Length: 244
Length: 248
Image 1 (cartoon, each protein chain N blue to C red):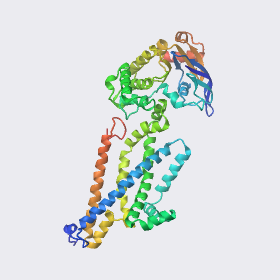
Image 2 (image 1 turned 90 degrees about the vertical axis):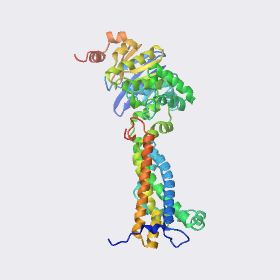
Image 3 (image 1 turned 180 degrees about the vertical axis):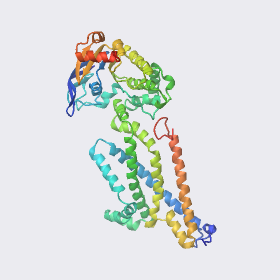
Image 4 (image 1 turned 180 degrees about the horizontal axis):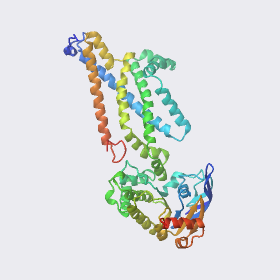
């Protein structure tokens, strides 16, 4: 579904992505982790070209996204993206947040878009909040709406960029639960996160990245019990037992 | 002060037809409103376009808008009016010159000049407010909209402008009032708006104090009601949690 072929990106002298080769198969859930500044957020943003790349190819569902001839708007309509800071539209109700793109980009009929939005809101447990405005919701609720907004476009793949990092601890669970249900429903997902519990339980594969390089790519059981590189071992020690 | 106030003057005959002085004020107010409202509509539309241009990634487009703002913001309003009224007609093609200077009645040509002047002057100021309104929005808003497959025009139309305009209602209100106050420059090129009628009343009746008191009062009440109206609008379009939303 997603394939990175020797992808490089430089910010001036900084080599942010260094020879990335990676594949996310249809239906697969891949968690990307790594220390801050490792390039993982940049990596996930290159998939829908919110970040451009300097060199290499990224194929999404048979389309090379780095090709200047690619219709990025059409591509992005097929790729759901969930941000760390939710980025809901504050001037629109929850329902309008979800229906805006289906109506404007896909030309969906308003009634149909709203029916679908309510369905998605039920799925994330927020149907009763459809008329609320984003500022009236908690962080966890906003992020669940943001997930529903992404799903409303019926995407081929969902990308999550640290979806729980801006949340209070007691709200992380409700968002991860929605993501887990989504994974079980067969959605192809690429998730940048520090939530190792989620990675262990839900991911098909964990990718560890540092200094712009993919250092490990393994099934969770293997990654957590026997990380091969010193940097991954150190990272896991810090994330799993931060007080020691 | 040894002045004998005579408020009844407004109901006295002007000596021209059966008009009383109050009729002059009503006519003057009519022109003031006609100038300000038409100029405001143009300024708002043009200013919005220029404000958007200034925030675009395209250097040429934003450069044009920046140059426009610098030009119209740094030349005094009165100078701009004289340019529009005395100079610009001479630059028109010959046919248009004849039309503007001879065929058009003098009131209409003065009206067109002052509307153009106020519209272009105020557009520069509206532009700056629209620009700051857009730039005040978090970058994540554009990112989110792009990630959903929106084209740049759609991002502006559905995400950026509805928020930016809500934020800038208070400073826009101030510009809206300014255009009514600035319309008084029209009196200098012979358009009989409120200030011109006031001066004429003062000269004809010799009741200078009464005339200017009434004019002051009319401007004050007019602007106060506009301000209230804009306050109402601000509350009406307010959205919970969005900055600048009616104090919520």
